[in-house]
Image 1 (cartoon, rainbow, N blue to C red):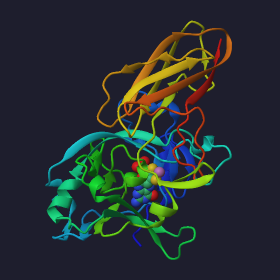
Image 2 (cartoon, rainbow, N blue to C red; image 1 turned 135 degrees about the vertical axis):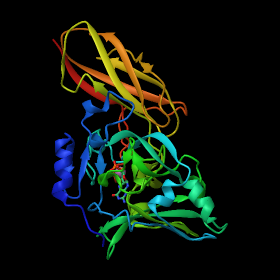
Image 3 (tube, rainbow, N blue to C red; image 1 turned 135 degrees about the horizontal axis):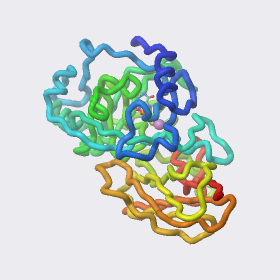
Image 4 (cartoon, rainbow, N blue to C red; image 1 turned 90 degrees about the vertical axis):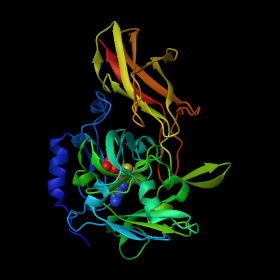
Length: 361
Ligand SMILES: Nc1nc2c(c(=O)[nH]1)N[C@H]1C(S)=C(S)[C@@H](COP(=O)(O)O)O[C@H]1N2
Ligand SMILES: [Mo]
């Protein structure tokens, strides 16, 4: 196995940045809600971290990306080779499929994420399709498999399981899927996949394999642990369990201001937040104050690429005392947030309407 980053070192950095801890080892922490507002990207040190295993420390001089399997021209690319290829920079929202899991009732297994397992960054790298074209994916290939350098033991599987995920050849050929080596204009930090990670715009974060070392074109559907044992919705529909892979981020908005349990002055009330969806741009965000009607919030500025859309509603407080703010986003594909999260056994895609309690003085 490769050398691991000292867990104390990684958690000290996360603590200094004010991240909210789920677990120290492997390091898992979320962005504080109030930090989600402000810019169109999240400063890198405050970007949430989701790791299944210890963080591998890869040596950039010996690191290679092996491209093989069902391809005409297997290759081994160095970082310099990748830097010398066409680059693309995209603003992309990353969200863990487990974001909001703590709101599920009854609780499910898995990290009990609040609502901060989401962030936006500007990612720079080589379009994956360019690397696939160079290698020449054979017609017999069905999927492209991405292998990270990290691994460990997992439930009900023997030996060491690497972090591996696949995409269909069609999804992998999307011109915006990146082999990213930079985040917010700097080399990827070790927590976020140094020296190379996949970024799949619109998809839940699990697709974005960090510490990438191998790409393999394969002829049948991949059945690894993180593909079929986890990151699967198990919905109950008509008394039957339906299994469906976790793919696109479900539409969601978050209220970032005022902060939960905050106190506000009577009179003018500014409600602000962010909204995003993997299925398309945000069409509208509506806010309700107390038991009031839904009011349309204003979408602020342009949405940057696949980043989130900031929104605000300037309204008035109704009366003194406790009240509830709710925000509901709808995307251009017509998806809207449900009143209650749709419970599923492994607790993914919990995107119910965000509710924040405040007190009017
Ligand atoms: N190699 C590897 N890649 C990984 C993971 C991992 O544990 N190992 N976690 C995935 C999950 S579930 C998420 S949500 C994102 C989180 O990326 P971040 O830590 O940069 O926020 O990385 C994905 N890529
Ligand atoms: Mo995730």
